[in-house]
Amino acid sequence: MAIICVATMAVQIPIPLGYAHLGDCMVLLAAVFLDSKYAVIAAAVGSMLADFVTGFLIWCVPTFIIKGAMVLIYVCTFRRTGNTITSSALALLFMVAGYTVTGGMLYGGLLVGLASAPGLLLKAALNMVLFLFLAKYLAPIVRKIDGRR
Image (cartoon, rainbow, N blue to C red; front, top):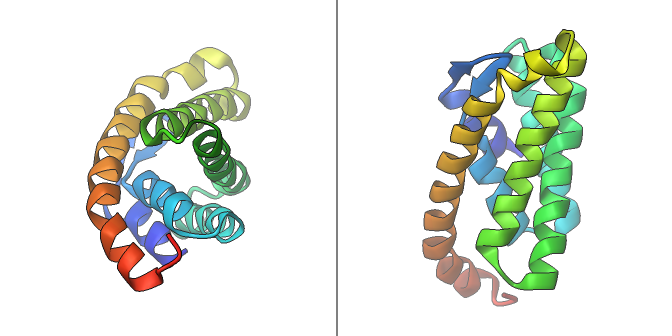
């Protein structure tokens, strides 16, 4: 939870209606390395706390829902396909759609929400690349420590 919060707050690049960050990489790592219920809690609460602390209060509840759902989408897709790329892509596309629609609802129309989509897609792509890199190199370490995976 703390890692997700800090990763979300550490580097914030302004985009329409919010900011881009590296927290989604940590959300996906939580989905891979934690039990799914703990990953949902870490993602939802850690991301929401980042919005709260950085003054994006209007986004706290949507973020809580979107980030928790990202974990569930990743976990369910991975269980069915066994494919990390597909699972992370679907989770991140849901995040883009969730924030685009929510931005439209909060700020007066879908066109307003769509203004954030290019920045969200770029953020998603960056987070996915970083996630795939870290997951590949962290998996053997976690297996060695944990023994369960």
